[in-house]
Image (cartoon, rainbow, N blue to C red; front, side, top):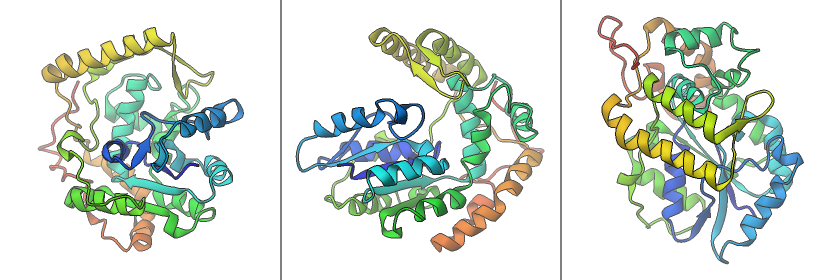
Length: 313
């Protein structure tokens, strides 16, 4: 039985929730992400592998998986509902403008986009210049329409099966958000995870670091025909290579080159905000929550254009 799924949002803080859930003694959540409900895994042995994993979970534990891309795909939502109609769904939502910028760097890291400064690369995405050569680029904007995608899930699941946590709420009161998360899953909500070891929304924003990590992609990963997904190759050897590159990046390159999200120009911010403004307003009404911080630039206030620092190279 699948008790819960973290469905999103991609680059929205779902890894933080996953770490908090992993620490709880009453919860099992698979490490990494599970693609059982998406293509091509769904048509192959994805469900069988999922069932094998769940069968091995000790009795009495609440069992779940994470795949933050699920939120943005209606067809995958229908598969989840067919397989586990009573499962609980969890999503953590970040300012869609901030999320799109973070996803842009994430996709470069995965080798799904060329390594190009954010101002140029995001402009190319918004103008459709990457659509044919880099089809995964379309997801970067699409995944930020939270209310649109949530509405589809609500056609398949009752409202009480869906927990939505915005970054506004999580950043304001982490302990309260985690207690709510545990309560939603009906486990001991008094348990306190080691929150200081679980950063929210960490990413890689140096282009030099990303060039190094793309070497990792060439050695340790392969891609599907449309280059929209990466897959680990070589089994154990691939995992060793992946770990070696990530450790070197974290222990050496990050300390030298840094990892702070760049401030984007006012013009790019406005283009992205104008895309999302109606969806943000609809989400505000749906949640009954003030999301004005998203309207003012995201989780951190942007400086004026004259004070903005350039993106990290």
